[in-house]
Length: 556
Image (cartoon, rainbow, N blue to C red; front, side, top):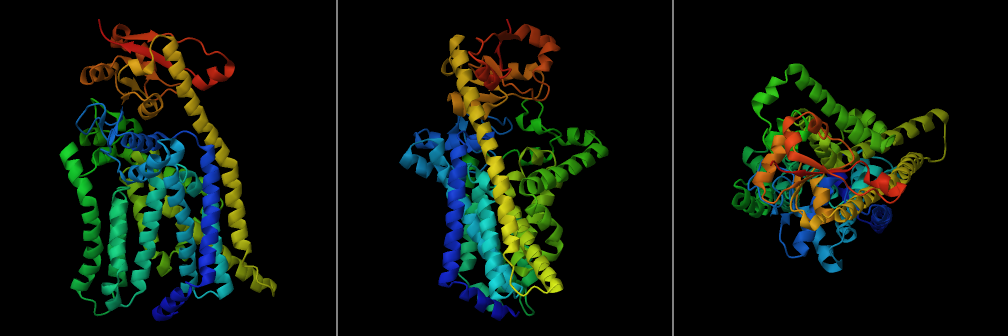
């Protein structure tokens, strides 16, 4: 199909039928996300609690601050401290809007990801329609494939789950996916029309908003550069290619510039802190380093075999844990078929972005990515695998039909399989995740009761060193400092750096060298005194609280 014919078909897809299909996908997505969000009552994991907590502080008039210090590698080391020394603010700013209107609750903060996450299936429907048009599929198969892609995305576990959490995942997915759709559309345009297309300005806006959401926007920009170079027609000048690249780039930079200026004033740098340190991590606990931050010398000292093993683990984690296990069998089929399906021009920007994000996070940040770096940027990749799966199933069903002489259209079989599988996985997994969030909420409520009964109410304890600092700060509404995976002397150093710090609180799950190191370190015998908590009232409370321990820190 010629580029001109394809563009004509794309315009005709704006019919009433298309709008009704998009609306149906949106409604299903909204219902699925609202139902799922009702199961999740507490912000888990901890980065989700961070975005929520800063939004709550903003709504309550405290400004963009946090009571949790989880990174010690960006000054100033104070508590409370300015927020977002590493992460980016747009998810919090958007979550604060419904929280201001409806009250500063976690349920209100979930409205932002629910809305953003519900738009992802609509964009997936549009992407499926574009690929079907490009492949010249008959109208019936085209409609079924597009609608199947949208409905599958509406109930697909990785997309539904992160649509219940007010962090960067759902918002970045919709912005990055929208940018990739625009890139493909602009690549289809004839040379002259591209330079005059107002959608080039919209692409810049999406770049800027994505830059306020996640650092992976850099790979989105690289994808656009590669698309422009690959789509250049004969006779396209270097100046024309440069304008296609720089116009959206400058708009994106203009949107991001005020935040960069704020970071410069508050943290002394316009760039997110700790990014380079994360690349030099030899353990996931390095993100909490206080006295022993990652260095190039320590990184190289682990040796080439360990460095290679880290990359194998990073690739394996991102491929299996993040992409395939949560979305099987759809994700598995999509990945197998990707070398064939990914050749479509409509998918090319998304393929390039997905490969860049996967490879860079796996190979440059192999340790940090096992703690969530790729997980929160993987939404567009899930969409790519989903569409790839449906394309493969459509082709397979057509081939089987021809071999068996089927006379009636059965294109619906592919979407029926993907939607059914996605519904089953989501229905099976979401209640468990909801139970986990209720368990964390209950643990911290019980801990507050136990501490109060022991004469140490959380609001009177001052800054607390703990292995779950963000959860503590948002559940107990008091300052918290991350426990470094270092010797007890580092905790003593924290008490000196942050005045008023007297207590160490550790949750039921041992993390790194703690708390076992307290039994062997001589300084611990002198400076750490364990405080007995009252026993829980029943077995349910005992299970929820687990083996939580509290120490008073201070050397005589």
